[in-house]
Image (cartoon, rainbow, N blue to C red):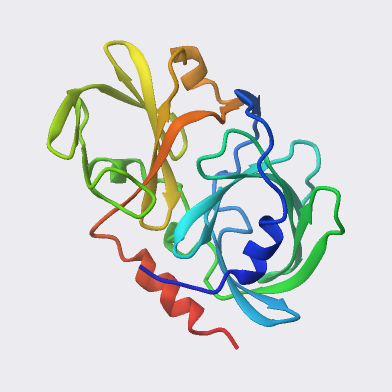
Length: 257
């Protein structure tokens, strides 16, 4: 697992606690026909020196694992500017820290963190990865088949082993008969006995998140592409044991100057 410095990001995000629980919110999915501009490995040029930033289509990574969900703010984006609400993995509502990406060049941007009630902090950033190269290691596009097969637990999960089949999931040796369907690019909906029980969401890189529903989620809510479910019983981060994205990311981060 790769590691990179995140003190700059953590210091700002730690200033505010998560907001109260919200069941669903309007959602505009970041994943489009190709990876969004922000997807990739970046060097943040902070006053304290260069810092690594790793972002998939809809998650910011910290300490080598996907950590903060990105939800694009509808109506606030033009060709070069993208504003996001954020949510910390495991929280049930927005984290009161907005994120803005403003494209300043083909491989350059301004990256802004805006804690609620405080002055935004803006830094410049340069891309260390190649945008949309072979669908991008961190992209969630065109990777539906990768959901099936073996996954292993991480420090962000309780389970140790997960196997996903078309009609069965096996968690730490315990098999469950299920149905699985793609409900959104990069996201599978899992039902058991006709009742939705979880999302398996592509986190980008070598990772996915098994998001266990709270009781009462309907099939219609699971399939709804306009409103995002925020409140889960738990979110477990799993890793593809055969993935090589961690290696690629670590290689890019070594290029920081």
